[in-house]
Image 1: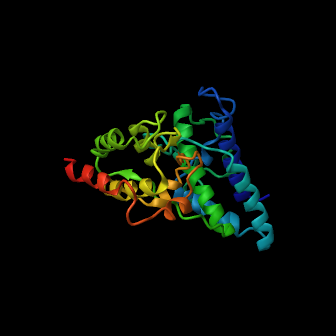
Image 2: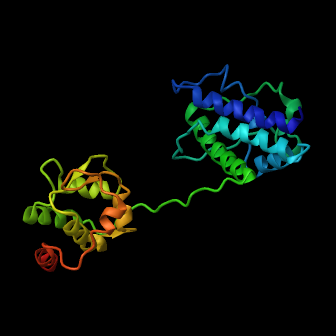
Length: 259
């Protein structure tokens, strides 16, 4: 096994140790016992990865190793810390690429970072490794969907008025819950008390109070149920578009009078 393979292997073992440490306590024998050469900046890591990739004899061998590494680290997750993590290397032990090399495994001054630092550093390295490994394998990520967000908080008051006037939500669904489901901050189920045609029209009217608001995005919350009790899908709502739903004039009046 070459030096670059050892470095990648040791980094993955380090990520495993950090992820498996459940007690949030500094463990000097495992996490704290790692030598400093595995602590590096992203540019330094990129140099290691580039040299690691070119050591393989053929593409199939490379893909097999990268896929194995990717599958190993994808089960991990690390919370992003509020503060950055500073990389500290012993100047007397500098090796190729500006960090300790494999032959420096015996250095005595391992860095006693607290668990919060290890978690933060692991988040940075873990995210970068996944990105590089997926790019190397040609993995195409699905385009991230933009979440509905609030543009004007007055919509909470508006929905309260609409519900008082039309009772468009069943008793187990509150107006504030409806808004919070739309913006992804509530896991509650929303049950409607109006038909899909009137609900579709109401959605087109409150759209101006949000960013990234679409009928499809509303349906993709997967938490809104029709008057008949069925989970609303995008096609249900899109097909419910009619020119003059029964509550159109009354809904328009509320919006006209709302300040």
